[in-house]
Image (tube, rainbow, N blue to C red; front, side, top):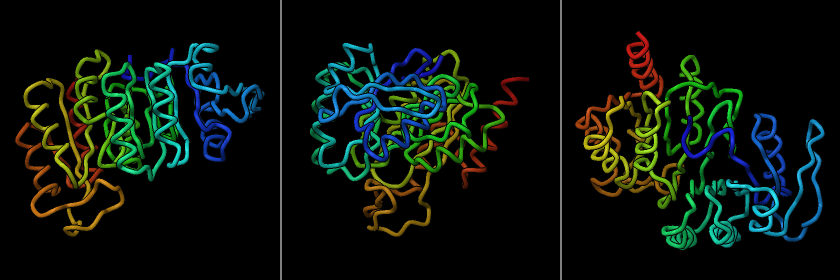
Length: 296
């Protein structure tokens, strides 16, 4: 099994005919993702040729694409100014999973489409995220498939590059699913959502959680782990040397006074029984020890 994304997922790409959409659709297809269509109202009815002789049809709307193909996942490579309307369109069509890769979406727009989708059947991952990959099954986003080995570790991360590093470091054990939730102040899927899904997944044995400075998501996740998660969890928090009041990399990665520091997050996680590494490599070593113990 996997969470959110599996071998039966049928994926459409909103913004497929743009440069980023074309590039990453090519990569997703190469990694075995079942991509059944693109969406661009201006190019509806056309087909796009990809490497290996694959022809992908372009539809005028998400609803049309779903009706014609049975798609249940959309990956969005839509420019920031149009991202909100694209997400709303996907929600209105009833897509199960909308993976919003786009960076630089106004927080107001994200807040509006987050609230719009809150009581719908659509799960949003992102924005400003690398996506979701269930190695060997499906890859919705920009995570490099060549570092992704299938296994029994679940990974949830705010950071794209740290997602890649952790997947590479633990490639000898592999992953059930890796979810890059994004580093904006508002995200559709949280650490807690992923922790719950991994806890419920019989083919995930242990979990890596990567956080960063800013907000209190990691502290809330620590409380959730303490009360609800029985599987081993290891963690890493990026930003121990970040100066106060300066945004670091992600829009949500900012320390304000005593709030949102890496030290406070590490302390909360450790109080919940989570081993927190000083570096990503040390965190990977913690997980390696756990997996060896589980297999012995």
